[in-house]
Image 1 (tube, rainbow, N blue to C red):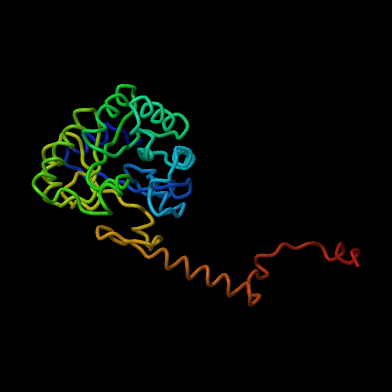
Image 2 (tube, rainbow, N blue to C red):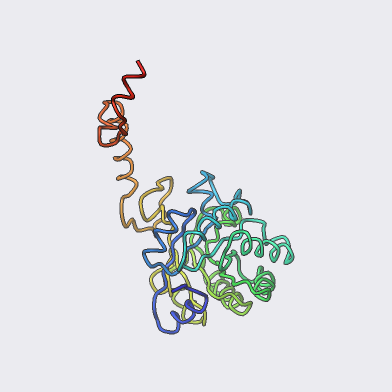
Length: 275
Protein backbone atom coordinates (compact mmCIF):
# COMPACT_ATOMS: atom_id res chain seq x y z
CA UNK A 1 0.00 0.00 0.00
CA UNK A 2 1.38 3.40 -1.01
CA UNK A 3 2.61 5.55 1.86
CA UNK A 4 1.32 9.12 1.83
CA UNK A 5 1.38 12.21 4.03
CA UNK A 6 -1.79 10.79 5.61
CA UNK A 7 0.15 7.63 6.48
CA UNK A 8 2.67 9.81 8.32
CA UNK A 9 0.01 11.62 10.34
CA UNK A 10 -1.83 8.42 11.20
CA UNK A 11 1.42 6.85 12.41
CA UNK A 12 2.02 9.83 14.74
CA UNK A 13 -1.50 9.55 16.13
CA UNK A 14 -1.17 5.79 16.71
CA UNK A 15 2.31 6.02 18.20
CA UNK A 16 3.79 3.91 15.38
CA UNK A 17 7.41 4.64 14.43
CA UNK A 18 8.09 5.83 10.87
CA UNK A 19 11.08 4.58 8.85
CA UNK A 20 13.04 6.48 6.21
CA UNK A 21 16.25 5.84 4.30
CA UNK A 22 17.99 7.69 1.50
CA UNK A 23 18.32 6.35 -2.04
CA UNK A 24 19.66 7.88 -5.23
CA UNK A 25 19.08 5.29 -7.99
CA UNK A 26 16.50 2.80 -9.27
CA UNK A 27 18.12 -0.43 -8.08
CA UNK A 28 18.67 0.68 -4.49
CA UNK A 29 15.25 2.33 -4.30
CA UNK A 30 13.64 -0.92 -5.42
CA UNK A 31 15.47 -2.94 -2.75
CA UNK A 32 14.65 -0.49 0.03
CA UNK A 33 11.03 -0.20 -1.11
CA UNK A 34 10.58 -3.97 -1.18
CA UNK A 35 11.90 -4.17 2.40
CA UNK A 36 8.84 -2.21 3.52
CA UNK A 37 10.21 1.26 4.26
CA UNK A 38 7.70 4.09 4.83
CA UNK A 39 9.65 6.73 2.95
CA UNK A 40 12.68 7.18 0.70
CA UNK A 41 14.53 10.47 0.83
CA UNK A 42 16.43 11.53 -2.25
CA UNK A 43 18.76 13.65 -0.18
CA UNK A 44 21.16 16.31 -1.37
CA UNK A 45 23.60 14.08 0.55
CA UNK A 46 24.06 12.58 -2.92
CA UNK A 47 26.62 15.35 -3.33
CA UNK A 48 28.81 13.64 -0.73
CA UNK A 49 28.11 9.94 -1.24
CA UNK A 50 27.42 9.78 -4.99
CA UNK A 51 29.27 12.73 -6.54
CA UNK A 52 32.24 13.07 -4.18
CA UNK A 53 31.67 16.69 -3.12
CA UNK A 54 32.94 17.87 0.28
CA UNK A 55 29.48 19.25 1.11
CA UNK A 56 25.97 19.52 -0.29
CA UNK A 57 26.28 23.10 -1.55
CA UNK A 58 27.32 22.19 -5.11
CA UNK A 59 24.29 19.97 -5.77
CA UNK A 60 22.04 21.34 -8.52
CA UNK A 61 18.36 21.08 -9.38
CA UNK A 62 19.37 18.94 -12.36
CA UNK A 63 21.19 16.53 -10.02
CA UNK A 64 18.11 16.19 -7.80
CA UNK A 65 15.73 15.74 -10.72
CA UNK A 66 17.94 13.14 -12.39
CA UNK A 67 18.39 11.02 -9.25
CA UNK A 68 14.87 11.65 -7.98
CA UNK A 69 13.20 10.37 -11.14
CA UNK A 70 15.32 7.21 -11.01
CA UNK A 71 14.29 6.57 -7.40
CA UNK A 72 10.63 7.24 -8.16
CA UNK A 73 10.70 4.55 -10.85
CA UNK A 74 11.91 2.01 -8.30
CA UNK A 75 9.73 2.96 -5.32
CA UNK A 76 6.19 1.65 -5.62
CA UNK A 77 5.04 1.93 -1.99
CA UNK A 78 7.40 4.33 -0.23
CA UNK A 79 6.68 8.05 -0.01
CA UNK A 80 9.40 9.64 -2.17
CA UNK A 81 10.70 12.94 -0.77
CA UNK A 82 13.23 14.95 -2.78
CA UNK A 83 15.51 17.57 -1.23
CA UNK A 84 15.42 21.10 -2.58
CA UNK A 85 19.11 21.94 -3.15
CA UNK A 86 21.00 24.97 -1.90
CA UNK A 87 19.74 28.27 -3.39
CA UNK A 88 16.74 26.66 -5.08
CA UNK A 89 14.34 28.17 -2.51
CA UNK A 90 16.24 30.76 -0.44
CA UNK A 91 16.18 33.49 -3.09
CA UNK A 92 12.40 34.04 -3.24
CA UNK A 93 9.01 32.45 -2.75
CA UNK A 94 8.60 32.42 -6.53
CA UNK A 95 11.82 30.48 -7.05
CA UNK A 96 10.89 28.09 -4.26
CA UNK A 97 7.51 27.35 -5.80
CA UNK A 98 8.93 26.99 -9.30
CA UNK A 99 11.66 24.58 -8.22
CA UNK A 100 9.37 22.55 -5.97
CA UNK A 101 7.09 22.16 -8.97
CA UNK A 102 9.98 20.91 -11.08
CA UNK A 103 10.86 18.27 -8.49
CA UNK A 104 7.25 17.07 -8.57
CA UNK A 105 6.80 17.13 -12.37
CA UNK A 106 10.26 16.14 -13.59
CA UNK A 107 11.61 14.33 -10.54
CA UNK A 108 8.30 12.53 -9.84
CA UNK A 109 8.47 13.37 -6.13
CA UNK A 110 5.58 12.78 -3.74
CA UNK A 111 6.88 15.59 -1.52
CA UNK A 112 9.81 17.99 -1.21
CA UNK A 113 12.09 18.82 1.73
CA UNK A 114 13.79 22.10 2.51
CA UNK A 115 16.01 23.30 5.33
CA UNK A 116 15.30 26.12 7.74
CA UNK A 117 12.82 27.39 10.32
CA UNK A 118 10.89 30.63 10.57
CA UNK A 119 12.93 32.23 7.78
CA UNK A 120 11.60 29.80 5.16
CA UNK A 121 7.99 29.66 6.36
CA UNK A 122 6.74 31.92 3.53
CA UNK A 123 8.22 29.44 1.03
CA UNK A 124 6.72 26.44 2.85
CA UNK A 125 3.29 28.11 2.93
CA UNK A 126 3.37 28.97 -0.78
CA UNK A 127 4.51 25.49 -1.81
CA UNK A 128 1.86 23.78 0.35
CA UNK A 129 -0.87 26.09 -0.97
CA UNK A 130 0.11 24.97 -4.48
CA UNK A 131 -0.72 21.39 -3.49
CA UNK A 132 2.86 20.19 -2.90
CA UNK A 133 3.57 18.44 0.43
CA UNK A 134 6.58 19.83 2.32
CA UNK A 135 8.82 18.13 4.87
CA UNK A 136 10.75 20.69 6.93
CA UNK A 137 14.29 20.22 8.28
CA UNK A 138 15.69 22.05 11.31
CA UNK A 139 18.63 21.69 13.69
CA UNK A 140 21.90 20.82 12.01
CA UNK A 141 21.04 21.84 8.46
CA UNK A 142 23.98 20.87 6.17
CA UNK A 143 23.30 23.65 3.67
CA UNK A 144 24.14 26.13 6.46
CA UNK A 145 27.43 24.44 7.39
CA UNK A 146 29.43 27.61 6.73
CA UNK A 147 27.18 29.69 8.98
CA UNK A 148 27.41 27.05 11.74
CA UNK A 149 31.18 26.80 11.45
CA UNK A 150 31.03 23.07 10.78
CA UNK A 151 28.90 20.06 11.66
CA UNK A 152 27.90 20.91 15.23
CA UNK A 153 25.04 19.78 17.45
CA UNK A 154 22.37 22.50 17.57
CA UNK A 155 20.13 23.74 20.39
CA UNK A 156 22.43 23.13 23.37
CA UNK A 157 21.93 26.56 25.00
CA UNK A 158 18.64 27.92 26.35
CA UNK A 159 18.28 30.52 23.60
CA UNK A 160 19.20 28.06 20.85
CA UNK A 161 16.80 25.46 22.24
CA UNK A 162 13.94 27.98 22.42
CA UNK A 163 14.66 29.01 18.82
CA UNK A 164 14.46 25.41 17.63
CA UNK A 165 11.15 24.90 19.42
CA UNK A 166 9.88 28.11 17.81
CA UNK A 167 11.14 26.99 14.40
CA UNK A 168 9.40 23.63 14.78
CA UNK A 169 6.08 25.25 15.66
CA UNK A 170 6.47 27.76 12.83
CA UNK A 171 7.06 25.18 10.09
CA UNK A 172 4.09 23.19 11.37
CA UNK A 173 1.88 26.28 11.22
CA UNK A 174 3.19 27.04 7.71
CA UNK A 175 1.84 23.65 6.57
CA UNK A 176 4.74 21.17 6.72
CA UNK A 177 3.47 17.58 7.09
CA UNK A 178 6.63 16.46 8.97
CA UNK A 179 9.92 17.84 10.20
CA UNK A 180 13.40 16.33 10.26
CA UNK A 181 15.37 17.03 13.44
CA UNK A 182 19.10 16.65 12.79
CA UNK A 183 21.94 16.89 15.30
CA UNK A 184 19.69 17.85 18.22
CA UNK A 185 20.08 16.71 21.87
CA UNK A 186 17.64 13.89 22.64
CA UNK A 187 15.81 15.70 25.46
CA UNK A 188 15.19 18.73 23.26
CA UNK A 189 14.00 16.52 20.39
CA UNK A 190 11.62 14.80 22.83
CA UNK A 191 10.12 18.15 23.82
CA UNK A 192 9.67 19.21 20.19
CA UNK A 193 8.08 15.86 19.33
CA UNK A 194 5.60 16.24 22.21
CA UNK A 195 4.68 19.81 21.24
CA UNK A 196 4.02 19.11 17.55
CA UNK A 197 0.95 17.60 15.94
CA UNK A 198 2.99 16.58 12.88
CA UNK A 199 5.58 13.77 13.07
CA UNK A 200 9.27 14.37 13.73
CA UNK A 201 11.91 12.35 11.90
CA UNK A 202 15.18 12.13 13.77
CA UNK A 203 18.76 11.80 12.59
CA UNK A 204 21.10 12.20 15.52
CA UNK A 205 18.16 13.29 17.68
CA UNK A 206 17.48 10.21 19.82
CA UNK A 207 14.76 7.58 19.79
CA UNK A 208 11.98 9.81 21.08
CA UNK A 209 11.22 11.13 17.60
CA UNK A 210 8.27 9.75 15.66
CA UNK A 211 10.60 8.21 13.08
CA UNK A 212 14.21 7.89 11.97
CA UNK A 213 16.21 8.49 8.80
CA UNK A 214 19.74 7.44 7.83
CA UNK A 215 21.89 7.66 4.72
CA UNK A 216 21.93 4.09 3.42
CA UNK A 217 25.67 4.18 2.58
CA UNK A 218 26.38 5.00 6.23
CA UNK A 219 24.31 2.19 7.70
CA UNK A 220 25.73 -0.37 5.24
CA UNK A 221 29.38 0.64 5.57
CA UNK A 222 29.61 1.88 1.98
CA UNK A 223 30.85 5.38 2.82
CA UNK A 224 33.81 5.80 5.15
CA UNK A 225 35.02 9.35 4.45
CA UNK A 226 33.19 10.49 7.58
CA UNK A 227 30.97 8.55 10.00
CA UNK A 228 28.79 10.65 12.34
CA UNK A 229 28.28 9.55 15.95
CA UNK A 230 24.58 8.86 15.34
CA UNK A 231 25.20 6.26 12.63
CA UNK A 232 24.73 2.57 13.40
CA UNK A 233 26.25 0.15 10.90
CA UNK A 234 23.65 -2.56 10.33
CA UNK A 235 25.88 -4.52 7.93
CA UNK A 236 29.42 -4.24 6.51
CA UNK A 237 28.36 -4.42 2.88
CA UNK A 238 31.36 -2.29 1.93
CA UNK A 239 33.70 -4.99 3.24
CA UNK A 240 31.78 -7.73 1.42
CA UNK A 241 31.95 -5.75 -1.82
CA UNK A 242 35.69 -5.15 -1.53
CA UNK A 243 36.26 -8.88 -0.98
CA UNK A 244 34.13 -9.67 -4.02
CA UNK A 245 36.02 -7.17 -6.19
CA UNK A 246 39.35 -8.61 -5.05
CA UNK A 247 38.12 -12.15 -5.81
CA UNK A 248 37.08 -11.09 -9.31
CA UNK A 249 40.48 -9.50 -9.96
CA UNK A 250 42.32 -12.63 -8.77
CA UNK A 251 40.22 -15.02 -10.89
CA UNK A 252 40.53 -12.94 -14.05
CA UNK A 253 44.31 -12.71 -13.64
CA UNK A 254 44.63 -16.44 -12.95
CA UNK A 255 42.30 -17.44 -15.77
CA UNK A 256 39.81 -19.11 -13.40
CA UNK A 257 37.09 -16.76 -14.62
CA UNK A 258 35.32 -17.10 -16.93
CA UNK A 259 35.15 -20.90 -16.73
CA UNK A 260 33.33 -23.36 -19.03
CA UNK A 261 29.98 -22.76 -17.32
CA UNK A 262 30.15 -19.10 -18.35
CA UNK A 263 30.95 -19.76 -22.03
CA UNK A 264 28.75 -20.08 -25.13
CA UNK A 265 29.26 -23.01 -27.52
CA UNK A 266 28.92 -23.51 -31.26
CA UNK A 267 29.06 -26.50 -33.62
CA UNK A 268 32.62 -27.82 -34.29
CA UNK A 269 31.77 -28.30 -38.00
CA UNK A 270 31.42 -24.53 -38.30
CA UNK A 271 34.72 -23.99 -36.54
CA UNK A 272 36.51 -26.39 -38.96
CA UNK A 273 35.43 -24.25 -41.91
CA UNK A 274 37.04 -21.19 -40.40
CA UNK A 275 40.63 -22.57 -40.72
